[in-house]
Image (cartoon, rainbow, N blue to C red; front, top):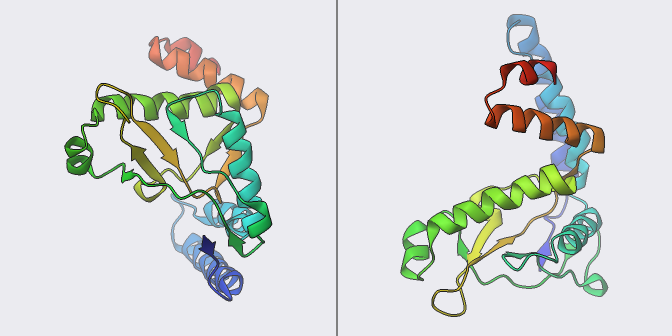
Length: 191
């Protein structure tokens, strides 16, 4: 159960105003790095981070989208027990993806986990057009294999930052990624 801190939406708005003010002031002194577009992007997506209905929608969409994979776990959302300020979902009993010692002690092949993670995000971004956009170690857990020699699962949590990619942009990313991998500079510059 994740409960929103009382008044967090006002605090976030104040923080965003302060960031915008600082970015505007900074732009008067610095002409190489302009932080105003970053501040605008933060202002655009911050409301989604404090709206648990949005987070529940995103979690369910990702769960459905990735349901054909047996190496990924997205928790179920319990809508009857969730609101805009409270979200209830399956408990994930896993190991933080950055805790290498604990993963190895649990018999997890960390190289295989890295491969799965890369494959998962490539698939979400390049094939499916929707991805978890906050993949820091606190949001990624590893579920050790149930049997020796089995595969570990990656569990995703915290879906406040989940992005959809327009199909045309996704197609351009595929061409660009393929050109980079194939070392084709002419294709890179024409994308």
